[in-house]
Image 1 (cartoon, rainbow, N blue to C red):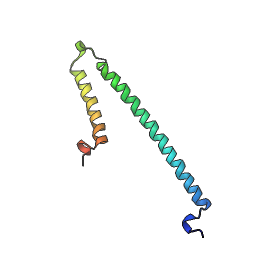
Image 2: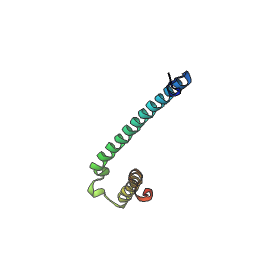
Image 3: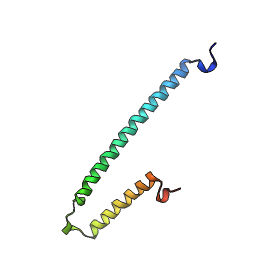
Image 4: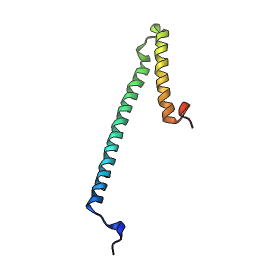
Length: 89
């Protein structure tokens, strides 16, 4: 005898298919966003390796301010990602 939990109606099949497609779309979007982040991190690391395109004799307070701004933005990201700072519980 078939239990009610084993009955598959077209409506249930449609819901299951929609859920499967939704999960696949979410995974594809996640992978795309991760690739975007990885690309930005790579570019930022390269810029840092090149001292943010600033030669030692060009360093001034304006460049320090620029790096302070970048550091602040990165801190917001890492605080959020790691549950630190204002995101700490």
